[in-house]
Length: 278
Ligand code: NDP
Image (cartoon, rainbow, N blue to C red):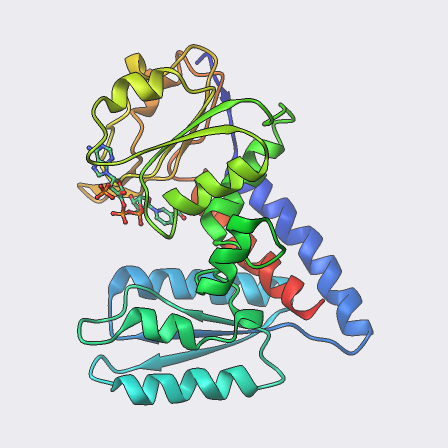
């Protein structure tokens, strides 16, 4: 293998260790961070994510509570819960696990979260803050991506970054964060004319598409940093958007799937919850 392996699992673990330390210092000052996770319905993938988040809270010493609501809950009942959590002094972070079941208005629910408790960084106030360069909560997966690249200790400023995918959860905020770090950023999406040619130019390539093994060796400039956000299941096995086995031969550094970006997402959520108290 030519590329340096970016071990997100180990990096996430060391962030969690640092946070544990911070939480015990906060507790000594009488402050305990609290995270409320709202899960609506019985989507199995969402249930797994919620379990992982609860486990991470427990390990770090963050108080967590789960509100598991039935699929047929009304919009009003859900908004009432969000309002109650907004007012609860023991809760510093509120996370509504997406996607919500059909019939519920996701945008209205996100808008109802107090931006000061919006640890997922999806509220339009926090989205706006990110784009105008003000401090605020940043979506956790993009925050994890930047953290992984920062830890490589190669300057981001002036680099050409290509982000494939323009979702509000991953692609767009990732591009905004790299722009904030003074990179030159290109965003590709399903209507981009020649994704391959764009990717070939990248010093840092982020794939957030949801198409297994889409990024091939020929798409990658030799020595580039390749961040694979994709989580795809093939015959029960997790694979990324990057064809890891061939791309690792040309890339300078690469994240594996699993064990790359995934564990960072939860670590950054924990970090945001601790920051919400501070
Ligand atoms: P979305 O489906 O919301 O967005 C996918 C994006 O890819 C869209 O912008 C779409 O373009 C673009 N796209 C689709 N096909 C192509 C193509 N052929 N060429 C170029 N662009 C294309 O997905 P998410 O952003 O939510 O997630 C992306 C991946 O990351 C998924 O595999 C998901 O599971 C994973 N993920 C991983 C996380 C982690 O913690 N590691 C967290 C969140 C997501 P258009 O806008 O034009 O439709």
